[in-house]
Image 1 (cartoon, rainbow over the protein chains, first blue to last red):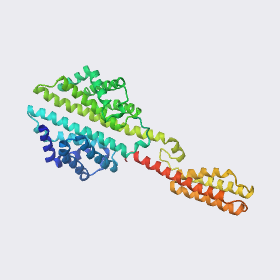
Image 2: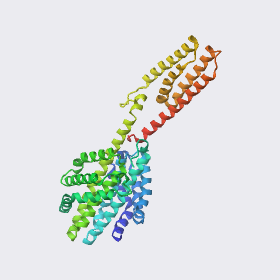
Image 3: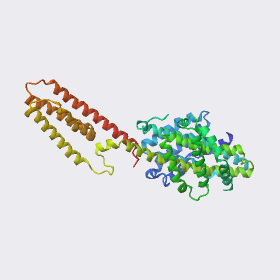
Image 4: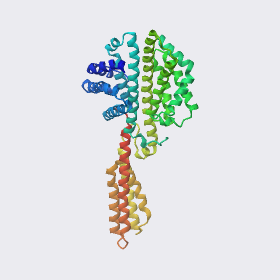
Length: 154
Length: 278
């Protein structure tokens, strides 16, 4: 966990900068065309919120439950804005990548020991984003009321 | 890349045991209940096929382009099995985790140099799976839209909804005018000419139902119009006969017209939920 603290501090301290870089990236990414028409002042706050929330999601002992609450709300907001599911997911993937792309990440984990810490941080971050993918797709499904059209198979 | 090669070699030589471990895990994970009923022997080939494609993605400069078709097919197969997208994606995430779990178990990244290789492998694997998640969720959305369109097929024929968005309004109005004139004529013929009050009124449900489907709440006006005309015609031409039957008939016109109108509105709202964002 100590290894991941470095990453958490980095994300928390540079949330706005990372969010700005993400916003620049998401508006020109060919996989997220919906975001192209959105202004940075609408995009930056949603990423900043996630980056500031990163610490609490990381520290929470019941991480899955904490992710459920946060990312279900995230999904609901994106759904109401009319963002297609695959783009909402990819925008989140870009948010995660932006953390690693952030210039200081390289400097944060440079030595051999720190490489091990990097692996630990990456693995823990992935776990959190894995939950995010699951809860976002689950919430979209509920909001689209797809059960109206499906025969239950379980 | 050499670190990734190590991982690829591991996947290539151990695809079957990794896939089997994944299959066991996915069959009991609380987030993938749709997989619990699928026999392990059917799941193992799914995992093996995936790991085989994973290996191919590693050796191409454009992994997204190479894998798009494979992931589209993967989505189609899972959608056909009625596995919800959130579960299909979580099963995929578990496939990735099982690679790492197996790699850890095999202890392939021990030395300091290998730790650097491990980071490279992790990053590259994550990139592959990011593409997978994107393409699978995109294809799922298309398949969901297609299947709902199919389920609404007959209703859409009745609604005269053109898939190309052509205006059908004038045709609907013309058909409705013809049907209402026909209904008026039929009522006049039976009431004024034959002096009878028999089952012809069932035919009046055709314009009532169609008006409800086409114009929703506004369509109730047609039911009210036909019900009113039926009562007026009874008052004018069937003076000696009991009025109760036609009052009940007129009331039923309104009830049926309203029910159909609300159902049609519900279908339109449901359609809007899954329509792609513009």
